[in-house]
Length: 639
Image (cartoon, rainbow, N blue to C red; front, side):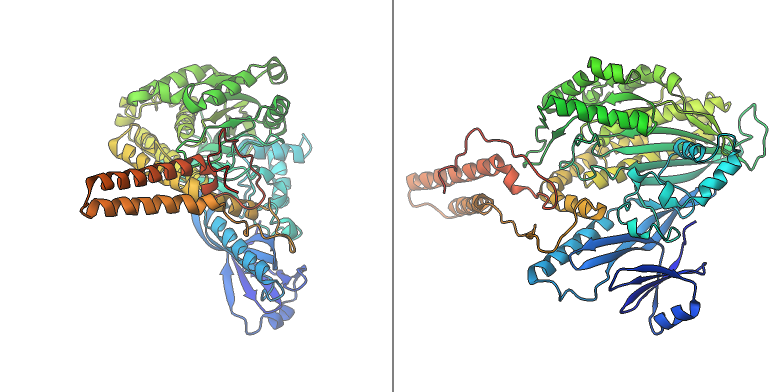
């Protein structure tokens, strides 16, 4: 168990962290960085005399910047809900505190860079969607936690004995490191496990619903991977180690009284647990789609097919065997035409290779062209996806645990869903698949008719006549639409598109207007702000380590085209406006004047979009780019 509420005393030489409900005190030397635990209350009192305490709710970790180590703390939290008797919390505010009292030991350039690094860290800490628990491992699904417990003890151990062994293991040691976003920051705190707070990034929602005279808990947990993490256009596809961009594990949990259903008699206070896990991740090929001022840049697919194959195999070996997800049912929602066509074709070709099918005999590929099938608001055609995947539900199953924690059923495979962003279309599809899984779980509890067979409609007669079904339906919609918004905000910078369908079960005019607004905001953010956001993520995760003496990554100048072309455009528009407002003396001169400046404006606009890669905001830390070659450079004559 981790200490919940702590008092931080920020003295000139030490950080003194004192839990409100514990005897041990953590002392961090601000000069040497040494950490130690003391039980001597009198010594602590002498250290903190005259220093006012600050209440904090956890230690995020230690981050190294140019001026030295910095302590990251959780300043404010919000209670999300209770699950299995454990409280789940959301980070509402976090901050970074320097060990060093000043930056006078740095050069002027290094001090300026250090301030930028601090701004980047605070930017990343302000991103919504950080969650934690002091008493349970939020980074593992229920099935993964049960598997970890079984592997930690002798096979003859009882569930209670296994739980006792797991509970004795510090949270930071038993967490799934993929989903612990402060994994690298916690390295120095691991020796003091009651102060080391693992934080996951994604979405957590817990709702209590009245159900047949009792109450059930519905939870939705999305865990974003820290591997190949980043923003929309700067992290796509796989890296050479097989890690996928925007990889998210989403778990739907249902906690019901063990006596619920028609054939069960048990302690009414005991809870049976049902879990269904899905994953999403960028198309598992090596490809990129860097912003270039176009609304939808064309994807660039690596032509090194040996690397493509190795990365593809590494990804699914990790998913199927290492992470024990089991067989993968790939649901590909890419367009078969347009800019996504080639990416979709290469993905399909890779999945059908003999070498792939031989290595992963349980890998199944299902392509559903979302935009074509659901064009002209024919959202009822999503039922086709459910029909095609119905046999997969039979073999997939779901996880079920008894009130004592012992597993009764196991989920044998997962749906891996993707579109090009793994956001909007993906969330709609995953919501429908999760709803179908929930209907099966309730059917096994004896409520076979709670949801209509057509899971794409929220207006079934059953849900309208059964208030319990209607209440549960509402909770599911709100949870999945909130999940869509939060994951989209973290990756793309706005709320999700198509969220009105998830929230209401149908497309609406207001939802279309909302999508248009979010699309415009995404365009602006992805082109002119996401380089900064990518740097913030890389710095927080420890993917980039600032070093003294290195050239400033922020001193890189912009190309001359970045100021010349917009200047020509602005000046040309000004001259055209003046020409239109002032009366001409000779129409022929006016025509030539207007023609000249119209040509200048058109050429400036052409140049801006032609050299769009030079105008967007690019990351400065750690990421390398391969620019697309220009067939013709109209400014090649400029020296």
